Image (cartoon, rainbow, N blue to C red; front, side):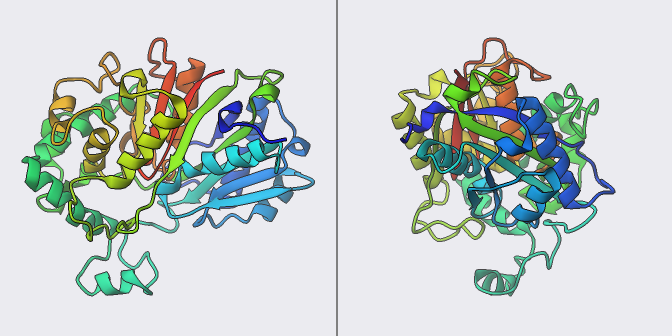
Length: 381
């Protein structure tokens, strides 16, 4: 018998340390984080019968299952793309549980993205298809690829790199009080941001770019009914959605009429509001995927937290502070905590609802975790 998706819950979370040189294989990192998530939930390997990860994850499901001692998998799934699919892992896992395809699904993501394969370096991507076409124009790193898209938004609304810096300072402020963050106790000033070297002038400086991190994270999803019998208070998956338009592209997103309008994020959010009956004013914390700082500005507007071109003022006016109207990336985000393809933001969302986050927002009842093209709202059971 199938269940509504909002009758599923996250019941366990786990992570390794976030570092620049883990000294372990990605499989070991995945196993450590997964074991921690199962222990957090009070589940054993024999309770897990489903697994979900990313299309790009090099950790094979069966190898990880053997490493953990999981006797039988009845369901596996992989979210497409990179960080844009981070919240899609929740959607896939919740759908598996709701449909009865699995009873408890382990979500994992682990890599050595600093000491091993570095996404941010030229030549990191295969040549076929669009990558080959755009590579001939020098678009051979994510920073270059995305900056060309962001430039239109910044030009239309008069957003400067200094405006971006105000968000980066906020993210690093939150990281500085999060012991799990790589930049724990290392806040920066706007002057520090402006002094960091250009990566793509005049759009992105070094401190506008997410980290390259080694590490692993994991979550366990099961039914809301079963969650009541487990070790931790379950965190409800209130709503979850994806959106990918015919005119869009995950990286080379240059071919739509209005580049400053993040269509997929807007459509995705409309679906969240439809499923949940909530709206922007009901969200207590927003955790927004930021491979680069400008995406936070585009996402804030697409999610309806402010109007077109208003995100720079929203941030400058302090709305993203822990005591603001919409605390942003309370863990420090991917710029400040670590870059585990955005899945570490899902862990922070769970902690905020549990009331156990390092930078806990008082009375947080609904948390939006946004990967823009895939999103989830967490809430209390």
